Length: 467
Image 1 (spheres, rainbow, N blue to C red):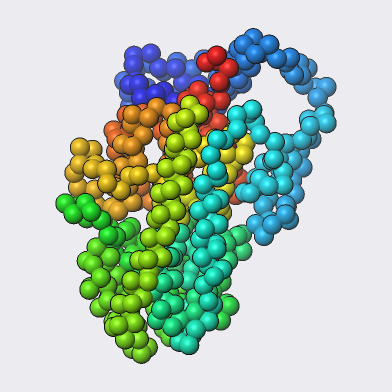
Image 2 (cartoon, rainbow, N blue to C red):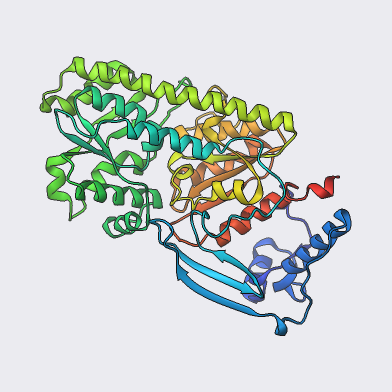
């Protein structure tokens, strides 16, 4: 929010946190500067909103809806309940002031928060929804049974990027593929209860998907130990994160599933970077004992890459069209950066991408719709070890000379690679960005507030100020 400015000699500490004198004293000790805490520091934000409202009314000549200062006469009520509009069963809060009602806590926003908070309308399609629908169609057309049995495939982690490839491989080898349901509260709770360590939230969710598949009675569970990705940037590594790599081994150690997974778990070690010949041998080590030949595996890999290419073509075409529309309209856009399992699982990200579009009229463009694969990031980091880290920094470089494309980084608490990568984003983009860290808590109020503050700081919510 300070647009990259350095800390100066005069430091003004506002907000509710400033009521704690120890915090102000700690800042003073660390910085070696005097910290100024203003009177009424806890309501400075409200004063700022009043000033913004005043400026908007003056600029637009709109009538004010200010209720007045006598709050004792305001009919204020608060109610908590559980929304049963979908399988998430969100814990909701209803705030009623007079005849108006507002709602907080829902993940999908489809039932309680349809009203937009701005007159701005998106000029592009809902790319997040279109990508999810694309994968849903592929799942629906994938046979759930086959001559060699049914393989359970968790709708978690790298499903959101690699499912087309694995669908082609597994079906060519004679397996049916059963994908677990969308993440909901029950799956998330199961994952939390079964996790034997303290990983990030997406890994917890993946445990829940494993449980759902095992409960459904699949013949096998497919969780590959994928080490790295294909890349044209051969000067550096292209690794996946340690939790993503080791997920099959961690899941196999869950006491409830340990015995069953000894019989059902299929977890080939795969190094995509090494090419087709090595992938064939990697998969043969796992599937050969089940009677699958190298030829079937080789044919499956080629089918898989053809399926994956279809997703790539869809993303490229839809992304180019969206960027063109935004530029021609002179509009602003939100570029979502992060890992696919954070961007496309609505439970993990509390459906914030849809809320940005529906409530604020944002043109939301996820990272994999951008042409970033060939961008060289060596001037920012010449040895980016992580595959997604390279893509994320490349997206920052892509945004650098496009001032109306604003980045929001969706990540998780406890994500080691992201904690490292984040420091290079501003250097790549040359502009501030917003980070949202999700950890499985169900209330979106804090995230929505941060999004609104970020959009306002970028001028997106104040077109009247630019007129």
